[in-house]
Image (cartoon, rainbow, N blue to C red; front, side):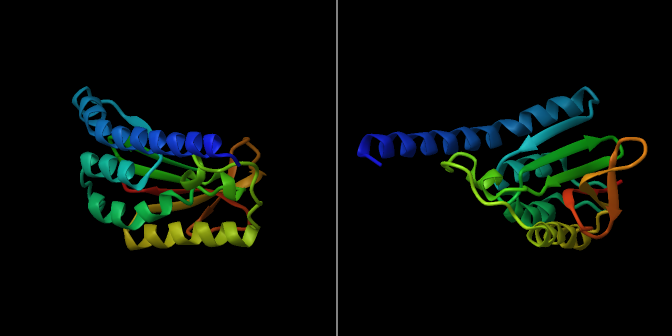
Length: 176
């Protein structure tokens, strides 16, 4: 690698970090607007700071503690393929998707060059188990895991409750 290429990569990483930080700062205004007009919403978050901004702005709901949720789930964000926060009138739900490949992790998305290595099913189960454990500690009312590549008769992903299952893909934590 030459110094020009390294400089461009360093600049790209710096810009990506600045963009993500600005997004974390902008998200609360969006959420307050959505709530003001009575709208449900779905937001994808890319960093622990963005997750904290969203959860704290949503606020508590029944047994949902947004600060505690940000504390426990924030460190997991970088290891996920995707993190979505969905807010309904009935309460918040978080969807954390376990990546099939290590270069697909949110923590790697601006920095990785090339293709990484596939995670084993055991590694994916362990990652899903970490999310489930956090959900239990946070007293989520429902914890489910959609299974990768396994469909039900109606075409929806097969779902396992309160356990990773054999082929975990998306872990859902819901407080209603």
